[in-house]
Length: 269
Image 1: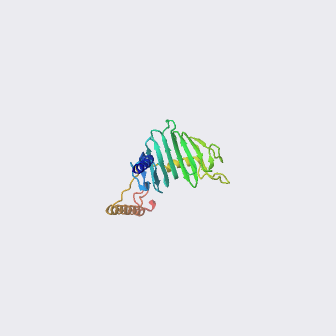
Image 2 (image 1 turned 30 degrees about the vertical axis):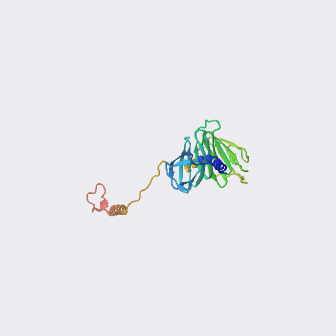
Image 3 (image 1 turned 90 degrees about the vertical axis):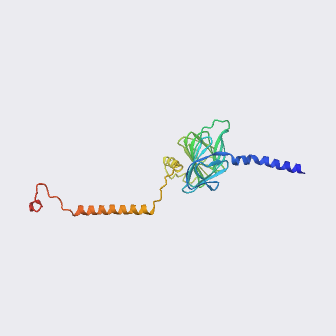
């Protein structure tokens, strides 16, 4: 009976060990940060390690840039949430799930047989082999922009191409984008068609701006009360001096015209 119980416990432990190993396996590191951002619902700091299944989150003022162990870079915009499901640099197996928000992916070239880099949203799967691209998910729409390389976007769960630079509108088949192209995946095509809020050039530029994370965020130090009083006093003195100068300029006696040595002479007036 005891041997049987031990065997069952050992089997359960062995079965759970891969999942435990995955949870603790390193996936990368936080490289830059604009608070507020979190990892697994806890505050995160620059140089914090990332592991498989980590949930990354940014608030309205937060952004995050993470470096994966294979050299790929994730730049996460504000109001975004994604999960690093898997990242194995040796076999080049990467899987990310984006719940909402904006993210730029700068992916190293995949050379391993069977290697993959995938980003999943609620209605699309994006696959690449070495590319720089943007993924946004909002209001049940997935927007993908390819900056460099090629991107394959596959609609899921009844979704279809709402707008595509490759001309596949209405299709539920995969779309391949090249540099400079964009696709929008959604559930329904509006009766009037897809109506972009900006020009394609603006959309591309905004997507980069929205996911840029500086290496260092400038900090404005709080001035002491004494320093503030001195600054106010200096400004006040300068303003007063300026007012006096202007008044003197306006009320001073103008210089007599040339050739009039006596200002009281009526001919000089």
